[in-house]
Image (cartoon, rainbow, N blue to C red; front, side, top):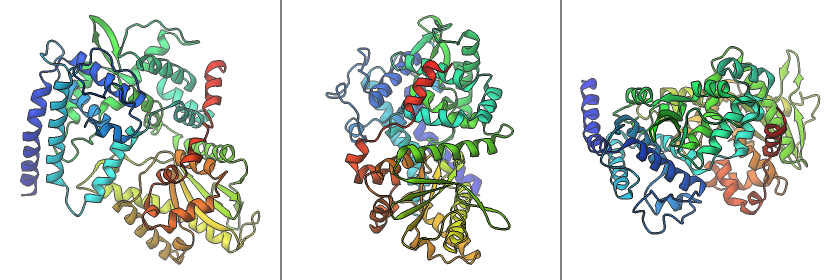
Length: 514
């Protein structure tokens, strides 16, 4: 009986999907993907709209797209364009095709049919019991598109991956050293910011990089168009995961296909190439032997360097051992005026299934349980500090203690049902350890990514950490805000003056280090 219900739901979704598919089938694939490239580059990087894009609405071509509000005016979003690109690769015409997305008047009906499909899926699968989970997975889908990928983010990953042991893992997995991989990726990304396609074999003018290096790179980051089409077709889901299912275009942002009669490498969505060499590289190597210990150590070292560079006024104390049997403190302790910030570093990524599932929250709950263990781990060592068991740091009743869990990528645990579930798990685990849950009120924890930590520490050079955290926690609304969003909203002037911490080092290394 349950199987039949789900079959009926899938059939309903497919019925709404059919008009979208049939419209896209009329599209000539090559110029349509080129149009996706043009719109993405205009939206995220302010690139001029090329002349082959026709019939755009008044104001579109001179809009800088500095915020989500700019997208709203034209009712088209980059996350929708990514989904349309997937549909184009599956259904678009490799030869012929009477339509092209270069015509705004053809693009808009496709976008509207996509919106109708997503609304239909929402009506079927969303309910009062999972509406906040729905918001949570929407955040994972959309928020990554609301900031431009840039060199500072690449530089952060480069710093972590530069750890000798991790570099060795990367070389074993890809056949390229980290420097070779990043040089090729940056050269290609620079090309695709302005161009949709690169004829193969390209002219290579990068120091110490030749055709063999490029072919090794393409082996890991590109697929022939027919193979990519098959993968995307197999990944298609006619249920609540339609817009959230794994998309091989993210794993292979470069496509081998014919363009202007020549064998070419096309990149319809350049930001996906940025992500593939940063967060995407993690998935390339995370199952390699010795990855976990190497990555955890490299991430901890990176966070320590960030803490010291971002606020030179604060004192930063590294992890120490104490007691018998031997225990470890948190990874880093930041002493800032009247505050002790207990910083624990966890490079673990939220699993894909936890980000996308709506009807089965098993994996999300499992991941939240892991997160709860991380946070309880901090509270356990704070209790030891309170009891005077830290030989290198005496208990100071005048200093407010804040636990801070730093992740590599944002988990987006804010203002959602997921955050309530996490709190319940933490309280339960504390109670099982005979630690009063009152500690959560006295020393409220926060979670942020390295990007949020960067903001916090740079802004705290002017405003104390205590001031930032107290103001955020005293308001019922802002208490559940994402830390990065809160700081950007509350301390706009200070945020406007922050500096990239690793970009210069990265640039110098790429220019002169090889």
